[in-house]
Image 1 (tube, rainbow, N blue to C red):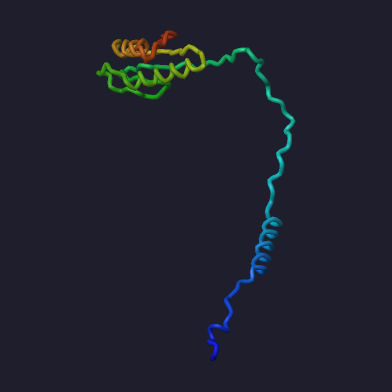
Image 2: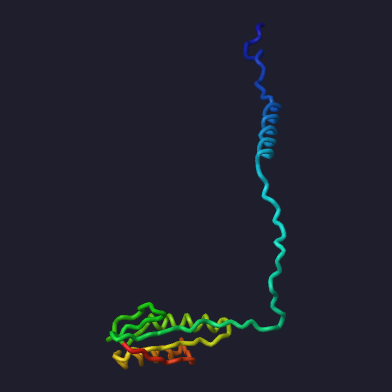
Length: 149
């Protein structure tokens, strides 16, 4: 009997030694060409330390509220309410509540400076005072100053 041709052909094999050589060459190439970050050096400066147990005293800047002659309410020179006929000031209440909460977080009393134009409506000034006395805000340190148109 004759042997078939298929029986004479060996199973294919893959020589891994050349692939391992190539991978080591690539590894050596990347190691040789990469740059390593230099180690951080000592800058030779010392930072001031706060003695333990001593309180940290921080203060917040006072919030400036203005009522102009047209009845607009400005907080730190930004117009937040321009409807002079409305008694509701929800944006002012939100700003004051945020300011008061942030001041109280660092154990500081919030301070507000109110100034109103001589020709402004008195009701608009009262609306600002009512916002300061609101239960969400409850700011007690208020300075009132006037300005001339």
